[in-house]
Image 1: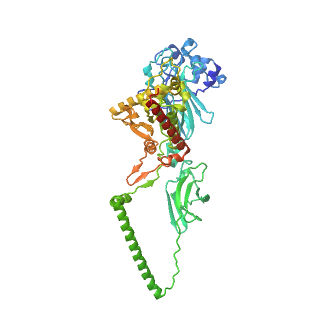
Image 2 (image 1 turned 180 degrees about the vertical axis):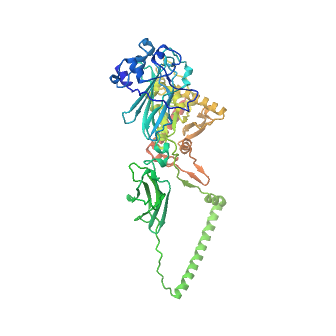
Image 3 (image 1 turned 90 degrees about the vertical axis):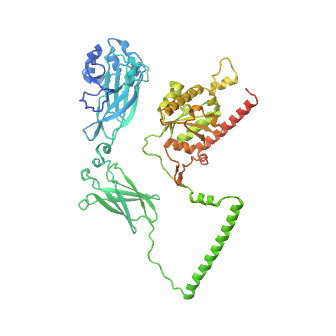
Length: 600
């Protein structure tokens, strides 16, 4: 009991007026005002009720809640279980789809949020209510809201699609991080899956009020750089007068050296723009500069300054004798004639050699003229998190194949900006949920699914029979732990692909791949509709698929460093992947020879 009380140590919020919500949908259920007597008796209009601090004080008979730290543990037992203790002794799964929604808040310095969620259908018939707590990360401020159903209510499983909402949590400072926790009631002892948490941030001042109203978030948007001789002139827009920003600073750095400049504009001359000089910069050097308001934690605007070489205008003239003036053009003419003759001779020999080799010079010329160039690109910055990739495979091809899959996952996660989900790395979660349940959840939550196809996956062997203590059975027990769940997951993926194809939906979520020691016929029929790759040859294509980056454009192509077929082995993870693929190829070759010679 004490352990449960410590885990559920939350705080109840004081009674506060509710904010009007204009965006409540028909499917959302919002809290009601009702008494504890109505909840206990199961009267009408008490389906989903908010419990205030006054209700708790009345139920416990205390004038204050200091004995429980402004909160009570196990609210179901204290508020509903006195008459019938069995009503609070059932297991209820944690809620799903916890979301945080910003609602209107008149104070320009704070936000208000509403939390929504869906109940789990596991134990929903015994669900008695919810408790929602909000805590600032790195701080001690906590708010708590309690909602209860009446004691006679029993929800069906179909009610798990209904959306429940909390009351607003107002007065949250802008630019702060919070953790919101939604807990399903009741919470029996020694039960851990009763809550769901989500971390979120309130809006910044600029997001809520606009950049021109925020002193801390303001930064110059318009910057112009001009070079006149050795002086660099920078012009930028000033902050609005209402922000009270009187001074600025500029910082330029290159080759390990920094140049700091204080800027104090004269608002009487120009209230919108100001120009200042950057002096003593080295010629032929590219500087990276920052400009910002001279305020604590002010946002800095970055721009570049390229200092050109200044050429001296004067040049000394030399007197040239008439004989020398005549000899110079003559020598130049002789040299030009010799160069033309040598070029013609070399060109004739080249044509003869090309003719002997039966190569068409027009094609070579066309290839040279249309030669592509390398181009540097960057990933999309609007994605907050890297793409989530689930890798499915079969372990029936032995430990060498499993090792190759694991090294592939490590390479993708380290050098392809992708979060990889692999059962080999989540053995505790797989053991806790069950292999099939874990795969189903990952298929649902992942952005992309990559199926590593091999001979064992395509053949789908039968489970080993009992009573055989031979080496083969031991091998199946060691390497076949995920075989049947993987095959079932592949069948599930195939069904999803078929349905998506029938409905004309996008199939880019699903991919198939084979290592160089496998064959394309190892790809199951249901996965022939999706993109499939040969690894490691097609690592760049896989990168393009995961990040939506075009590898080819008219007149140029994009080259990703250390992901090309030749360059990936320069990385430690790439070398490990190459060696794992080599070992798997040798193991697969030995296995084929063994079966070809009539081995069991």
